[in-house]
Length: 489
Image 1 (tube, one colour):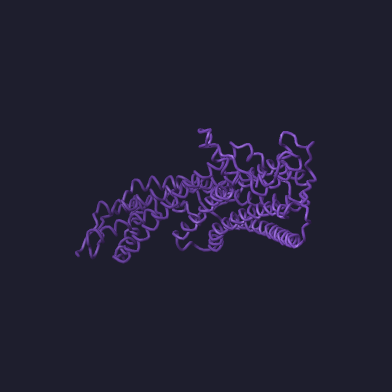
Image 2 (image 1 turned 90 degrees about the horizontal axis):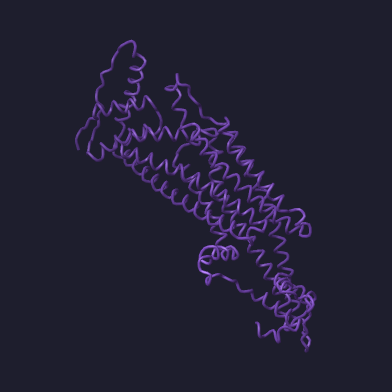
């Protein structure tokens, strides 16, 4: 260990950079250089060189400012030691890891949501369902969120690279881009619009399911494709408008005139606490919490209704199982007759009708089989939506709570914000993964739209379920088209 002194030319350059653009990143650049000298060159004590300032009256204000900055840096250098530098190095490494993970997540979000969007657009079956129209817009909103998160992650990686490698010229250029008033607010507008659109689509899906279950006979009159498109268009308009509010002036950033650039340049820093006002954060949190309350109410009601239906079906099935069957088995189908079977249309309808159309079957199992399958499918779809809902709020609520709790005070650590934003970005991965894993129709259309399109022999044709096969077999036997049900089972 030995004593070291900063190069006077390098030290003067640091002071000039600090005078031109005094902000957090230029200070980190100076901090990184000090730690480099302390650790790499094995310096025990580090000194700042003596500066000779010009006391000319014309440069009196500049000399005074240089002296104050020089005095601050000298006192800062005296407090630096190897332990402080080790803490700084660990922080830089953690930030690098977080930003790299953020880039990977953003790329996956963009890729997976692009696949979901293209699959729905290329499939007539998926596109014809109103629910999939909501899911299409949800994928677009998630794509927007992933794309907007990619920009700050890449920018932070470049900034940290410039700091670690003491590249002051690159750092100045990056700060000019990053802290540009319009670029900063447009980037945040993408983030906020994507978030609001995601929660709005989840709210719309829950309302759609609520009307479908509690008003089944008037569902097609209430939920039409035209109304659905008008509703989604209005949601996009409102989300984009709220996202653009900071750009329209509702922010804490201050623009500077050319004559006072040196006095207020430090106020233009593109950080969350320097951009969003308390009122804007309250507006965003209020909209999200109101949507959460409505969604929670809808799904709780749907859950209890589905549970009651399942319990009722189980009671009827147990009662029917204990009922003594007649010695001569009979089978009666109330909908299908030989005259109604035309080009397979009515037979296809039999696959989707509830099993209450079967009054009696050979062993009593077919009566409730198809209806139980439909109930299980409904519960499966409900669980899918619940996973999406829980994933959204588990990812976003920590960030929202943190923002609300720090609207009246300074943020203690930017690293915490980076972690919470990274967690929030994970939500955009939940939607495509859940749909691809849980939706059989989506997997079929995805396969047929990729591999199946180039290889005709690889087209996937789903086989009917056992309950649907039983129902079709009963219908066909009644129509004297099949000799026996056993030949199909």
